[in-house]
Image 1 (cartoon, rainbow, N blue to C red):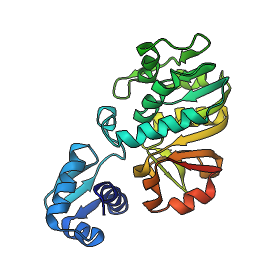
Image 2: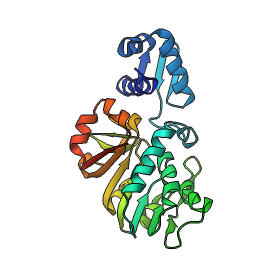
Image 3: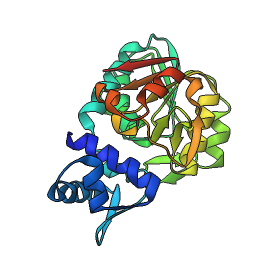
Length: 254
């Protein structure tokens, strides 16, 4: 079993049990104590768990943005390119804040005929790195600054979202599964994603394999309302992938 697959399995076990002993992890993964110890060290460095005597305990479903920016980068870049290739302009897009959508913004900055409405300051900044197409524009949603996500948030952000209508909402959840749909760990992130989803004709979900089959705290879009799910091929190895695929409109693996 590859390290990424082990890490996803460990996350699933921690979600179910909150605490995971080293021996339990060894049995479930079929690996040595040293491999489990190394996995726990790597996942703790990413903010995904906390090591304790004899094992590990569950932390937030999502590490801080600066940590997320270093996780599964190759998969996120591949997903972002695929999403950009499936867009047919002119379009009005909603996009939330996150590491995957920031990578996507760099792809979108090369396209013409886009109106991008986002609460992500990181995504908006991508349009200043190169000269955007003259017939594209970025609308930054107002709100309270969230310094951890480099985004705006709060009631004023929600109200402004409701002033717009978009063709597609491009959203990146913490977790997505057949029963719960797309979900976030933090309430502020979930309500923004929900407002964007409800204000768009279609919702496209961007989720690398580590998020497939995982549950989180608050749903913002049920699985049957996901028009397209973009992930990487490793998602097929995830628990719950087949059930999720049967619920969404279209699954695109890259």
